[in-house]
Length: 118
Length: 116
Image (cartoon, rainbow over all chains, first blue to last red):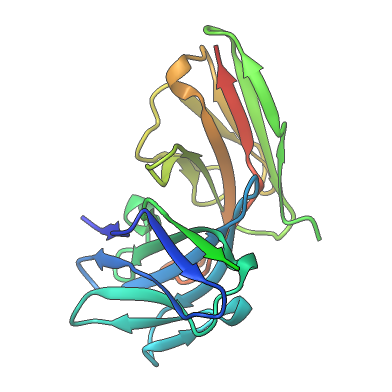
C-alpha cells in the first residue's frame, strides 16, 4: 500500500533563510509526487509535481523539490523564505503503475505547518 | 474562471439532521473527489467519481452518500449527521485520462461543518 510521511508537524525559519519541508513516501511502482500549500480558510493549491526526468523540480512562488529515489524522499525547498510563505504544506503520492480505480487515488501526508518569522 | 466552487462555506447542524454539500467545477474535468480534513490527520478521501456516471468509496465512506449529477457537479450527503462528522470538507477535480495519473487536483475552498 502506498503511504506518505511528513515527519515534522511544524517547521520554523527566519525570513531570508533557506527552508526545507520533508517528505518520504512508499509506493509499489514509480511514484507521482505532488506538493500542495494551504493558506488559512482556503483549499489546497498545487505547487509542483514530479512525474519523471530531472530530479530537481521547480514550481510556483520560488519553491523547488528534489526527488531522491534511493531515499524515497521528495523534500520541498526554497532558498530564501518569506513571511508570506507561512502556511500548511502537504506532500502527496500516487502510484504511476496503478492509476485506475482506488489505487490511482492520491495519498496525502498529514501536513507540515511552516512558520516564517520576520 | 471560478475553478471548483463549494456551497455552503459554513454550516451548523444538530445531531440527526441531514444535509447536502454541493460542488461544481468549470474545468471540464472527468474526475471529482470529496475529502475531509481533520487536525493532525491530513486529508482523507470519502468518495470519488472517476467519470460521469460512476462513484466509488474512498478511505472513510461510512455515514456519507454521493451523487455525480453531471460532469460538472458532485454532491456529498450526510443522511443523519453525527458529531464525529464535524470537519472541513473539500471537493476537488482532476483532468483524468485512462491510464494516466500525473495531473494535479484542483480544490475548492471547503465547507466548514459543525455538528452539535
